[in-house]
Structure formats: structure tokens, C-alpha cells
Image (cartoon, rainbow, N blue to C red; front, side, top):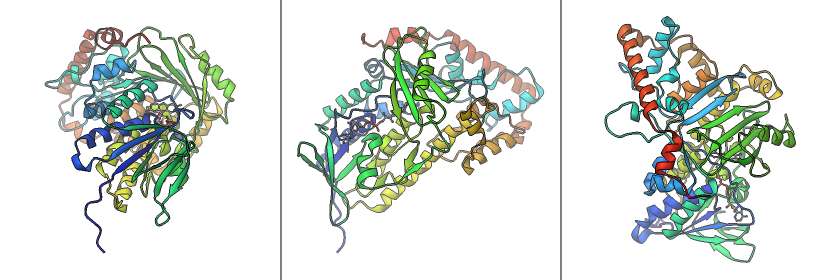
Length: 510
Ligand code: FAD
């Protein structure tokens, strides 16, 4: 018998109401609001008894496209989430103690004669020992160094729009913001503790979840956003977890808010420590802080003391303990269950990639949205793309640990000696020997990000793209000087990050 042609999904059940759950609910509600007769019911189940992880406050620039697609107002969003702007991450003591560099959002300028400006810089610095750092050609870095912010201007390319930005926000307020959006578009929220999962006897698909109070919630498609518990994708569907702890040994974190201090920096700070690293995320009402560490090399109490000693404002609470295992589900989509967020994997928050992976997971689910036949090639393609993105993101994060001259603690000695994936070994060697960068996944970090990290951590290429030698050197020097000056002047003329926030996106008193 041939398959019936029209079997639309009638009901979507989202399990979990953390950042992942509501980030999945909002665009699905928006898409299906326009779907007419094929509009499925969307229900989200969450348990106040379990709560959410409550961290996850720094993002990457594509979050702006996510917000724009939802039709959210940028200013309203920042106000309602006590948000601030993020031009990148300042790294301190990574590579070696005393080292400082910036991973800015955006690039080092437009191509020159079809070649990346980075390659021209490599050529010039051979003959001009006083050539300023390549960082001077990053607009985001120039602004961050001066604590300046204003959004990029439209129009012709210029220093004033040669950068990108993301947000810092309060994770709880962000989930609440999306909840309001999704519920206004018909998503039903159910409070309850899931205690059992009912499978269809004929094919092992999930038929329903059962709540502690006896309620039964059935559905056609289940999106597992239950966090590290992975109730459906890990539990009912038994998708194995690939453990990446040998590559990313940090497995714990202590998080604490502190009083806001001036100035409000338009960037995240990441400071390497003996057994991990510490984040600092400036928000309008407080600063978010956390110490990510490997529990084999430091006790939880010592980790908490290190965190508190590294604050620049008064702690507003006692540190909260979190444990995790870095890795990913081998398959994020099995049968009629799609895992999104921590349920599908976790890479430690060094480059704020988790929310990005949530967004991309939701985007791909919409792209490959199934009907009730759940053709297996949809799941296979979704899983292929997610695996590629997870692995290339993993390589980028492992790079931070691997390229290091630090040998001053057990963690750093372990990282310097640890074997790394062939893909990352290739990336490092390609850069070291030729100055080029391999982009294995277009949805992950681009060339300027790899250059920022590889150079920032202290790696120096032995060669560069030979085509750049054809460009007239004197003209190139002038061009570089002009662009650098334009960047410095434009950044200096911008308002401070504090002023911009006070004038345009000030949040109500918390
Ligand atoms: P959770 O927030 O854990 O939500 C799980 C949901 O499932 C909850 O609503 C819970 O009630 C529900 N649930 C679970 N079990 C049941 C049950 N039995 N019945 C009913 N409901 C249930 N990401 C970034 O992008 N940037 C960052 O800066 C960043 N920093 C981080 C720092 C740390 C230390 C950690 C650990 C993570 C960080 N992340 C960051 C990741 C980010 O926090 C998560 O990706 C994000 O919060 C999504 O979490 P989630 O929604 O998948 O899970």
C-alpha cells in the first residue's frame, strides 16, 4: 500500500521550558500561525520542581537574525532582559600568563585584490617590524578597547559598519520573554513532572508522556528540551552520548552574580585559571560570573574561592554548583523525538556556543520538518548537519586549551600533551605552515575567528598566500594606514557602551 500523501503533524510536544524549550516554541508558533489548516497544536511541558539551568547569558551574533525572524524589537528585547551588547570576548592569561587578546565579531576588513586582508598583513609584517597588531584592523576590537558601542550603520561599507555584535542577557528573563511571545501565538504551557514515557508497541515511537499527577500528554512530534536529563532522546530513545571529556576536561562550574561595576564593558571576559577559566558577563542590573573547572585538579570549595577572589564587585549570592559532561548525542533526532539544547549535547561555554546550537537545531528542524511518516532521511540529514557543527565547534574550543605555552598546573600540562582530533591537528598545522585556515563547517566559526584565536594564543605562521606578493607594497602600506586610522577615529567618536544603553535601551530597575 502506498503512503498517504497528506499526513501533517497534528500536535508537537516540547518537553522542557528552559532556554531551549522556549527558543524552540517561539519560531514554531510563529511559523505555524501562518499555516492555516495544517496548524498543529503546540504544547510545552515544564516542571517548576526541576527548574532550568539558569545560566547561559552570552551569545553569538546570529541571535540577532533569530530575533529579527521572530519580529522582535531589538531595543525592547535588551530592556526586558537587562541586556548589554557584546562585541566579542577578551581572553586573559590564555596561551601564557599575562597574555591578552580579543576575539572580535566581524572581520579584519574587506578582501584586497581578492585575498583576505589577513594575508596582506602577514606579508607586510615580514618587512615592517613596527607594523601594528592585526587586531587594530578589527572594528569590534577597536570599540571594545575603548568601551564604545553603537549599532552598525547601514549604507556603503565603512568603519562604522565593519563589525558585528551579539548580546549578553539574563537567562531567566530571556526565557520569560520568549514564553510570552510563544504563548501569545497559541503555545499551551503545562506545568507538571514527567515520570514516564509511553512508547507505541508497533514501532517504538513516543506515544505520550505521563505526568506525576496522572495526566497523559500525547503527540506526533516530541522535542526534547529537558536539559542534561535528556528524558526522551537519551532515556526513551537511548541515543548514546559521545563523551568528549578527554578533549575538554572541564566538567564543573560555580556561578555567582555580583554587583555591577563601571564601566559596563561591551564584551565578555574569559580569564584562564590554574584548573579552568573564569567568565565575566556584564548586564545592566548585575555582573554574571562563573568559574569553569576540571574537578580532577581542584576541589569544589577551592573553585568557589577562586571565583569569589576574581570578582570585581560584591558577590550577590553564594556560588551555585553545576556539573556536566562535555559531548553530544550521537543522534539528536531518533524516530519522532528531536533533542535540542543540553538534551542533545554540551560544549563548555568558552565561546558561548550553546544558544547558537539551539538556534541552529531549531532552524534545521523547521527546514526538515517531518510529516507523520517521519521519513528517515530527514532525521539522517538533520543528524549529519548537527554532528558536523558540533564537531567543528568542539575543535574551535579545544584549540583554546591545546595551543598553550602554559605548563604551570596539571590542567595545562594535560592539555599540552593531550591527543587532539585529526581535523584540529590539520587546522593547526595548516595555519602554522601556510597561514591559511580550513573551514570545515560554514555554520560555525569563520576565518577571522580562527585567526584571532590562533594568533592570540601565540601561533605564528611560517608563510602566507603567495598571491599577495603581486600587490604594490607602498600602496598596501598606505591602504592599511588609512583603514587603521578610520577605525580608530570612528571608534573614538562613538558613545560609551554605558551612555548608549542609558540613552536607548535602559532596563527598568531590577
Ligand atoms: P534547562 O535549562 O536545564 O531546562 C530543562 C527544562 O526541562 C526545564 O524547564 C525543566 O523543568 C524541564 N524538565 C526536566 N526534566 C523534567 C521532567 N521530568 N518533567 C518536566 N519537565 C522537566 N550557553 C550559551 O549560549 N552562552 C553561555 O554563556 C552559556 N553559559 C553556560 C555556563 C554553564 C556553566 C553551563 C552549564 C551552560 C552554559 N550555557 C551557555 C548553556 C546554556 O545554559 C544552555 O544551553 C541553555 O540554558 C539551554 O538549556 P536547556 O533549555 O537545554 O536546559
